[in-house]
Length: 117
Length: 114
Image 1 (cartoon, rainbow over the protein chains, first blue to last red):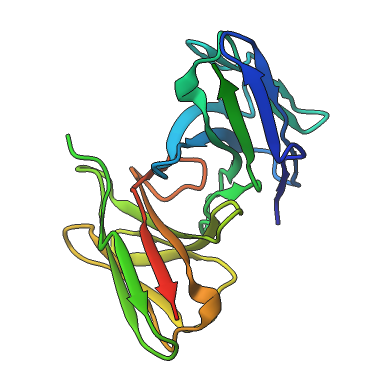
Image 2 (image 1 turned 90 degrees about the horizontal axis):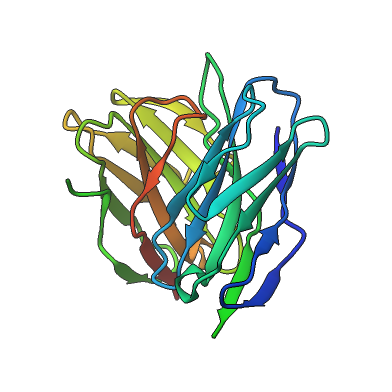
């Protein structure tokens, strides 16, 4: 079984600052994917970014980038030039690439990010 | 294209009752997953269905069941409701059933059990 740990329950930064959200995971799988999802107060979960474990290059999506350290089982999210609309719960999630049954995604408990004007 | 849709948006039930939640996936997606999100926690995996077959099940009691229809829509059923079943129930769709496949979430159904 996989576990995902997000050690920062809440973070607050000023608009335009850069912020990094932490995530660590534990797994015995070799092939897997990692995701960051955003859940704004309206509650719909939105995919922010995904990372394939077999790729050494860190994924980037506009202002969002990850620092994937496979050996350390660490997967942090960096948000540059933060905007008020980035205020949300951020969930780190793990998905195993399995040829058999599906275990779904394993989520962390989330980090509540508040962007202050 | 429409995203994942869920109905109803909110639901209030009393202990011991039965509830059915519904989900329509993104057009072209053949897999639907269900998650339970208790307030203040991350979502927990309940079921995944692909091509009308159950492909994965999380650690939930037999009171929880689901099915997928030929049009790939799905419903989640919960029998003998308990207070602890109060949560946001999220449906997610994906192209296939692999856990690594990107899942796209619906807005959820807020279930309150009194």
